[in-house]
Length: 337
Image 1 (cartoon, rainbow, N blue to C red):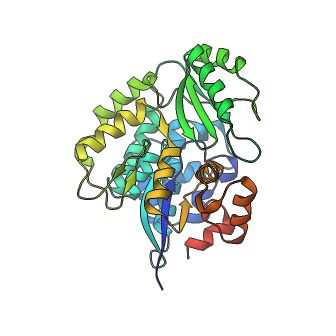
Image 2: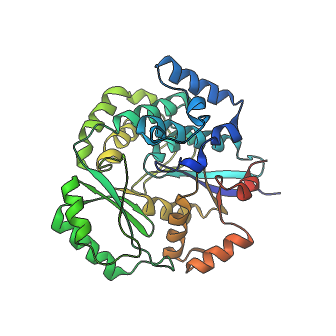
């Protein structure tokens, strides 16, 4: 029987929350790689992932970049290893924001150890920045489509207050900037389906305000950690890095330059992923499944497989899921034996 093709998506920050506490213990207890990651953390004098994941209660410490980034990376990487390769062929890998570091490891552009070290180190480096934060705007309506006129109004307000795009996320837009600018911008917005949500503990990611983080990363992570990806790797611009034609210096430069300092266009990455590789399914790695809505909104905007509304997407997911979220127990068993 022919294998089904899958596009793998790696999640970013904000996907390990209270419901995900214990994810590593539930799904990856006894994993050799988890033991290695714990050892790397222990040698650096940091709390192990097993201890963080096995805590009796979810606390604000779990949301700090130095803990959240390696937790999310480990959950996603270990999920990736469990995809049934006898039944599924991975044709491309992408990720959202911090998920780019996980995507590098999944695609084989860096080793598993180096991938974890990058995710772990960037959890700390991401806290080095000029003052500022992020705010999430839901532009999509109840049907998960975006009114172009509303989008234009929001962009005009951004220009008036010097607020920058941070992540383009389907029917959502994450913006970033100094706190005072975000405060004034949020008061000047047209009516939205939901109030803007300021992300606690997040800096002005994917903007020039992250220059200190970029400088620290370039000094910490050498270019010789990078190699050509073994499977196509789609970055936050929609560029595809392919085996035999990718320059590792350029991949290193993108990872610790543009990827940190410029907007991350997850919408473009997903659009290229589905159009260029036409996968039979999309597999969203755990933990959590908050990225599922954004992926659904991209499919609707592109009318992929004639899916043109939220109700059509929901119906398709109920019949034979195109999007498989490994953070959902009901869908996990589709691709993991």
